[in-house]
Length: 133
Image (cartoon, rainbow, N blue to C red; front, side, top):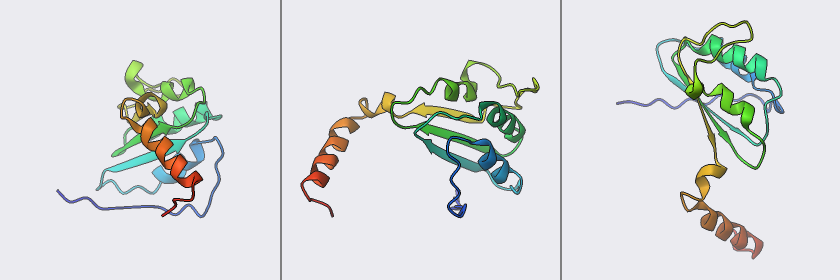
């Protein structure tokens, strides 16, 4: 199995808490010969949830998956609606997604289970005491 690495330089674009411009930008030029995985790390709530749903429904026929990791203590309730685990994602025009392409993961739910609290705290302490590498 061969895996090709691909990264796109967005030229320092700051999207704030909007995902739709990023999704629209990325899905328009995708060649259909490969499968793509988009990893989004976010520390806040998406403010353009309707437009983001529309873009995800549009992208659901493409060879891609989207993994969204929520970091921090924000209320990620809206982000969970983008994940099709509770049913078929609908656009604002009631168009159904062709398939579930989004997986939302709130990092805070997993960091204790994985023992990362201790590791992160140790790293913070090390940095505080000048143990930077």
